[in-house]
Structure formats: C-alpha cells, structure tokens
Image 1 (cartoon, one colour):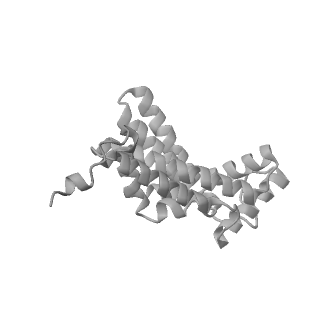
Image 2 (tube, helix red, strand yellow; image 1 turned 90 degrees about the vertical axis):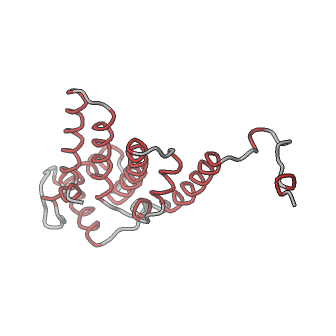
Length: 192
C-alpha cells in the first residue's frame, strides 16, 4: 500500500504544507505562549525574595542605598536592589510588583538571549534551540516568581551574545560592561 497517496496534501496552499522547520516554529510558539501564562499573576515570592522586597522598600523610604535591617544578601546583589527600587520609584508600583515585573522581563530576555547564544554556537534553528531550552524547567519557571538570578543571567547572556557576535574592541568593552552588570546584579551567577 502506498501511504504517500493517502497522506498527499500537495493540493493545500503552501502555508499548510508542514515541514520540520514550520513544525518547530509552531511547537516553539505554542510552548512559549503556554509557559508565558505562568507569569500572571505577579506575586509569588520565596523567603529570600521577601528580604529583597523589604530591603528595597527601606531604600525607597530612607533614600539610602545600603543594606538595611530587613535586607537579604545585599552585598551579593546590589544591582538587583537598584533595579527594583528604581522601577518602583519611577512607576509608583510596589516593590513586590516591580520585582515580579523585572523577574518576568529578564526571565524572558534570558531565554531569548540563550536561544541566540545556542543558535550562534550550533547549526540549529531558532525554534529548535528554543524547544531544547524549554525542556529545562528552570528556563521558564524562573519567570513565575521573584528571582534575582534571571536578572543577572540576562546580563550575562547579553555579554556572551556580544562576545560571539562581534570581535572588535568596542564590542568587547560592551561585553565587559554586560558581564560587570551581571556580577553587580548577583555575584554568584557568574559561578553558575
């Protein structure tokens, strides 16, 4: 029996003719949108995140950018405190909501920058790289709660992106600044 005649879809417009690249694109879009739903509602936090949230609140209240009695790990991640306090101060949002927005934004940025990085060092398509990264839970679950690692991770991947993309002194300087921002946002991310 000739199965090619049974499953012949050549009469369909080109849009409906699926090849492996289109399938990968569709699968990546479906999975990404599905995982993106986990960002809402903004609010979940862990105990250490609560210390960061309260520390940022104290920074805004006192106007002093330093560790306070309620801070958690300020010395390891002053950049995280800065970004949260800055967004909260500019927008008028609570420090919890600001931290949630930053975690979601930088989490998604980390995923896409990691995809670009993986695509650059391999021969795989964007969608296939994205699907591979979405197989690892931490690549998307970090968007769902207040997480300072994704803030630093996004800066780190941006630095790696510039390092692989351009090989000039100008871009090497940008790479160094990005890696410095990663360490400033959370020092232990560079160990990971």
